[in-house]
Image (cartoon, rainbow, N blue to C red):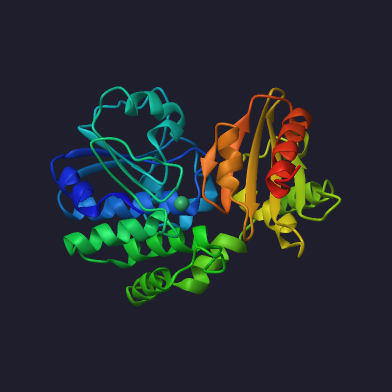
Length: 325
Ligand SMILES: [Mn+2]
């Protein structure tokens, strides 16, 4: 069931003029595409809007219209907004911006993560939506504001990003209906797919090769995982898309119910990404470690070296896969 409503969010946004839009750390096409599209929608309404990403976007996002205007959070950026809109996460997941967001500024929250309870002066959290991009589309519909090619491109990238380009089980008739409207408005599916999947630097593929070398599978074949160390990353800038690229390999194995990627952030911190099929709710597993996400895609950060974090997580996953143990 959705928490909050589009109407509530729309009414709240109408009240403010100088608006900050932000999203989660490790940005992905859904949060960036949703944020940039929302910025364009609100600017068409005469508002003054700034997008600030908690983490760098990297060259990878330059194909999204308006990405060049997006700022990256740093202590030097003046923060004097009348309200903020947080898309695709909770205010606590916005890295360096979280403190500002939780300091009493009116925050409006639009998200589709089931683990987000909804907070702020207004919120709309709909776990049935495949992507936050669907909710931004609904907001635009509510205002009957024009759907430009640039807005359509950002929203199509958002939908494509979170559905694996309409392959994952979160894809609904509504997702495809919206995608169709976006294509009618000028979004280019083939071109966007090239940017999402076939536009990697050599180093990113080399990273996949190294990660694949670490592939392991549980004795019953139901869990498989990969490791990624700082040494493998070798100074490459990490972007959220790397996890998407890499975790698809353990998930492809026919017997696998839970796929995992363990990434060494530093010597005492490990980021874990989960993907699942059918009956396993990985957001529940991630939540045990202070993380969250969706039923079939979730993540957490554990304050422990990679090997230790992996042992803890594999224990939790084994219990989830074998409730009788
Ligand atoms: Mn999303």
